[in-house]
Image (tube, rainbow, N blue to C red):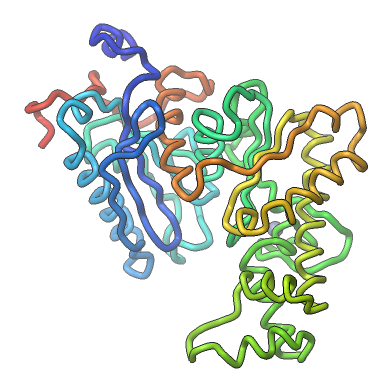
Length: 363
Ligand SMILES: [Zn+2]
């Protein structure tokens, strides 16, 4: 396969891919060029309520539309399909195992094989946070850094460990669930069933739940007043808690301080465990908080990590924003094709020639 691509006069890393990002609320696709730029972007809601086959059909639809909308010279050199999905996934077999937010029947779905067959291209899948880390490494805040932690603080808290130039998958592909590391012996329950996990303090869903509890108990004057302004089907969100903290509401300040402190404590553990040189922090909550979240991480690393390890660590904001999992599909495909990740390329049936021929058999 490598030979096929080389004889066409392209370096392997310089080919475009089709990227599909399967999320809990929307599915996005684009054709991603070797510099990370996105063309032919398409998006549609995730039809989780209609079952797994509807979700698969929607993924095939956005991939097909993105490929069709790309300029002919780009479409002719597409090397494969990169797929980003909520975890847990089996990256080797390209199977989405049991994501919590894609409906109760979405179990063991062979997403990569389905897309590979539909588009007659090799397809590769990884967890959204791993794909995001590949994106930040190739094009963003981890460029040139082969040992880093990627952390996203958003609706959930997720992460990825990139060590020695490789994603750390673990034997089953599950490594890097950095949001589910405990940062206390007692504390709020986590959605996963654990106790005092980073996610239980800092995720948007956790902050929203704790905000609702504060309204029910009258524990926050700010949130009680804010709740009165909500429409019938609206609920308080992490944004309301963050705004309450900025308005000096004591209960909101405590929740946000706990969230920042939990993320910082998690980072102390990640640094001592993995010796990264950089921590890249993304996600909507981290983005909104900026240095209010990054500052406590930097202080904790300076004061609570073994100093010889902590001195080497930079803490930086993610650079690629919401499209990071689309951008990361380009290096995902290139690495798997070149076997840089030391994963077997795929167990799915692949065409002998992964490069689409314009006007050929692919409609
Ligand atoms: Zn958890």
